[in-house]
Amino acid sequence: MSVQLKTGRNELFTDPDPDNARAFFRTKSRELKSKISNAEEVVRTMLKDGDYIGIGGFGANRIPTAILHEIVRQKKKNLALAGHTATHDFQILVGGECIDRCDVAYIIGLEARGLSPNARRAVQSGKIKLTEWTNASLSWRLKAAAMGLSFMPTRNILGTTTFEYSAAKEIECPFTGKKFAALPALYPDFAAIHVHECDIFGNARVYGASVSDQDLAKASKRVVLTTERLITNDEIRQNPESTFIPFWCVDAVIEVPYGSYPGNMPYEYFSDEAYIKEWLAAEKDPEEFKKFMDKQIYGTKDFYEYLELNGGIKKIQKLRAQELLIDTEIGGKK
Image (cartoon, rainbow, N blue to C red; front, top):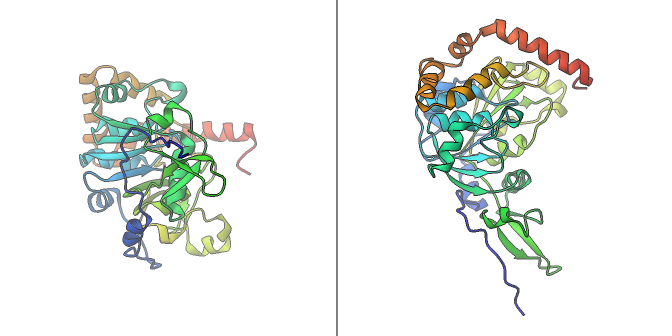
């Protein structure tokens, strides 16, 4: 007797075919060459309207703010987003009306800070189409892509309403006959990841929670790294085991000190909670929020001008002291 297999009801936003992805990756240079660039050029040349994007980091931690702002500043439209652990990054992109589709595990909430009123309005109005997953499901979708597969078999969402509103499919194990959820591989068109250290070729180090950023880098067709600081390739070679993202995944490198602001950068500086609170308050009134966006993003030419507008190095010094105090209290990164 055949088993009735279920299918999630929502849309699959990306092509999971590994051979189609491989056809693109064959064209990607593996040359060990300088990839130094800037946010304006990267967004203008590497990201087009309608692309699917993935953002590194976790929540408001280690987010590539300079790239997010530049996407908004250049008014990119109809993007799709992997809403894996998306808080302030989702808030920024929705504020710029850049996305219309989202694979969602965690969005709208800014953790203990509360909900984003503007993002909530956008989702509830139907402006952004959603397909549901769990955090683990999106991690495994990226893992499948990083492995060159078309899907990953799991059990984690079987029997849940998350499965019902996903784009997963039930499959039958050829060895045991048991049912599994097939999670389709996720191959983003573009990924932006902020790292602690990187050389000019794209060999990068990350300290603290890494989430799925290594798989995101391997799965994505185009990858830009923003980095707190550039280090020499000699330093990379002295400790090769510390390289979290290898150069052959990377298309562009941008040195952006304090580049996760207003988010947290583990062991570097704490999040600017007062600023995030101000952002959330501005979102309550659409007219006030428009003025806020005009001042903070559209009215600044780049991330450095934005940083100066919000306190510059003096603010960062305070946030660095706060982060180092927390680091000391919990025992440090070692």
